[in-house]
Image 1 (cartoon, rainbow, N blue to C red):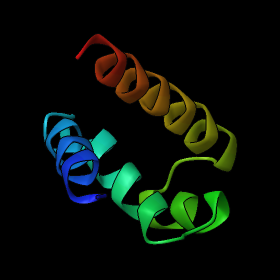
Image 2: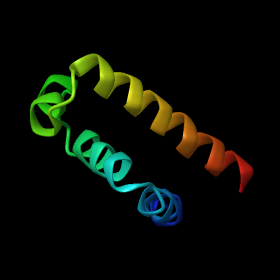
Image 3: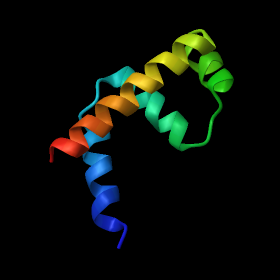
Image 4: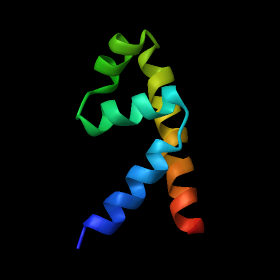
Length: 65
């Protein structure tokens, strides 16, 4: 039931650039923006902005297909 949508999401994540992919994988692991900021050495606000943009990009790609 969930295999096909998860496979599709996985495909879209694999097509992201390296930083975007890393950020999304950290989000999927349940890391907070503060934890991600510490790991990536970005500010927490920059992490939030980038993740919002990545989510929009993924959503737009899913809607197109």
